[in-house]
Amino acid sequence: MVGKPAGHGRLVEEVAALYDWIGGRLRQESGRIGRCNACGACCDFPSYGHRLFVTPPELIYLATKLDVDRLSPMPDGRCPYQQDNRCSIHEHRFVGCRIFHCRGDSDFQGELSEAAIKRLKSLCEEFQVPYRYWDLPAALNAFDVKQE
Ligand code: SF4
Ligand code: SF4
Image (cartoon, rainbow, N blue to C red; front, side, top):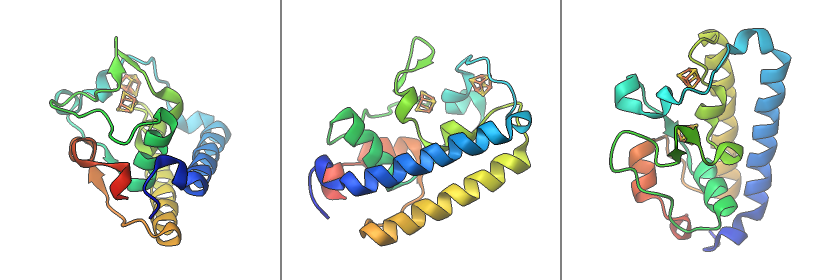
């Protein structure tokens, strides 16, 4: 694979299209999303009691948008991109962050997540990026876009 973030241009475009699609589905099914008051509690994973899994295309997308090779490490359970209780990378956030709403319809979220993961897997095949379904702390601590 090409070793610079800029070399992932087409993959990044495909991930952007996937994010647009997810946004469209969320708008279409607005009654099932559930309200979010942006309290930020779900970005502190151990305290909230859940986990976030991410894939290489999402990480490559974020690294490209931030123009970095390495992402911020995650030494504790809170996402390092949460600043002052807000998501500092909202526009570039991961699939799970887009879909999860604590008061939403979990069946709808499950269906949407499944479709998104299927697409991310197929992007890995198409762009010859090894597929991984990574727990966020492990992903942020190990990911290096030059290795992808
Ligand atoms: S989804 Fe729920 S826990 Fe997460 S920020 Fe929104 S209101 Fe808070
Ligand atoms: S990327 Fe943003 S929304 Fe997702 S866990 Fe981190 S701070 Fe929360």
